[in-house]
Image 1 (tube, protein in one colour):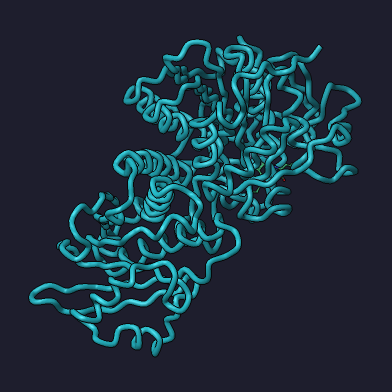
Image 2 (cartoon, protein in one colour; image 1 turned 180 degrees about the horizontal axis):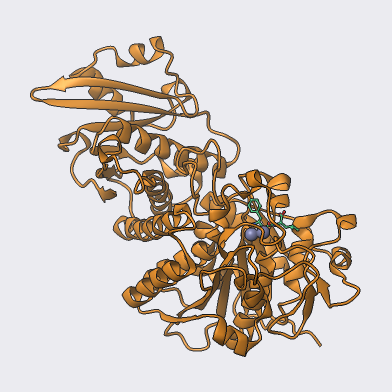
Length: 520
Ligand code: BES
Ligand code: ZN
Ligand code: ZN
């Protein structure tokens, strides 16, 4: 657990053990030099010489720690490098997030529970001091997350209850308490669902997750609907039912609704893929490719985290999350290759691979969202294709949309929040890949067309009629991201920061309620 608070007293007056300093290259640029002088006067007369001698030059990611006794207390000084200021402010902001990550990991490792740092000058980052505080506090909370609950030896994984004081220069103006509170809401909800993602498939079943969502709904006064295969059959959800058929775990279709008090507010729908484990089904995955398939519900988890967050931050838009939770298993009752299924909107698809199951449950999810909520905008989030991991790797979520505004806005928000996304084209040329001789569609793009991420996007597009729509493929970004201190190697909470910012400032980004173009 990490708690953070604003330090209202003088930096050194604080009774903390850890003092953290973020230094630019050549120990310059980002830090309040009075601090270094203070350490030199009180503890280490030649601090800057010591740092240089030990080759701490403030290079990006560099870390140096010093310990000093002070009466009966020990003071720990932690220096973290921010490198040279880059040409792009969003890169510097990301560097700072990672420095915060390094800070939290170091405090944990040294079992330091109280520490203080001061915020660098926001001008470098071209954002307000409030926003800088929010961004850094979210990163610190993300870094504090780990998943050790299934370890039985608690001594080797002691709990860390960090208490972090953030000092803001006295001349800065802003509602810092509110910024910190928002960050806490975002970070805590994100860490709650990262845990769901890290929980293996034998724990995080559709039933377990639907109950967890019901708890969130009760706590935050969100309307919640949960149903299984019977209601799904009534609604004609052949995609949901086809994937559900192969598992002994009952699938759960889960819907959460947030309503603003604003009249005539537009509705945004978030549709998330919630496969609690993806074996591939009858088109069984090879063993190595099956590792990590517990994360195949990360899209649904992200959508639900966003709901929990906005229930507290209260934007002036309506938001609904539609998250089918299903386990994809091979079984005597599982769907076969060559089967033809019919979705909620009446369209049919020939099953070429039962491993392309995400698009089947999402197809019904998209239909459901549009039919019952007439959203102005739909965003779906899914660990949809291994091809996306090949195309973009771990650092960028794949974005596919034919909506110019979404195409412009989502990558921009990605850079601002550190939750990066990059577009892939979604031209109609790719559509032919999904043609079937016997049904409306086939569920895997024909190999002739390659571009498996895009053809999967084209498949989903068939299930959106009127709404403005974007598809986020988080197959690469959801988990196992290498080299980013504040993400760890488990669930990364991909697209939560992106979507919270998008929803919170929806009207600013999308313009005042535009009437979406309707198909003839
Ligand atoms: N859940 C997988 C996609 C995936 C792969 C996510 C690797 C994260 C890492 C998805 O259901 C799947 O199996 N997709 C197939 C589609 C193919 C059969 C057209 C794939 O990517 O191989
Ligand atoms: Zn699959
Ligand atoms: Zn899958």
